[in-house]
Length: 113
Image (cartoon, rainbow, N blue to C red; front, side, top):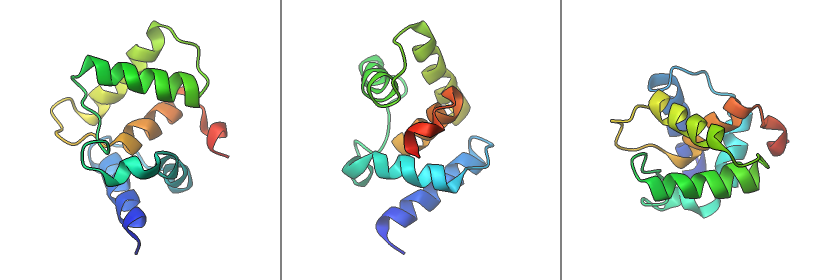
């Protein structure tokens, strides 16, 4: 099993156990690959849910640029809802898991086809 496959399995476990979701493994794999090398670095692999500047970065770089969504208050509301689902007290909020939940939330699976 490659390092990426191990991480994808860990992300799937988080979705099941912490987020109470059954992951679409094909989509989760594509979202994880889309994160690039960030998933291998301890700092960039996670999202600090309480850091406003990091949330702005996720909103601008992922939701607006990658998913092509129009900027507005609904983006930050969705991001906060996803973090609430993951658990604000959860220490490691993995970037790939948050991105996956955002893709599902906005119905943007087509971006990863």
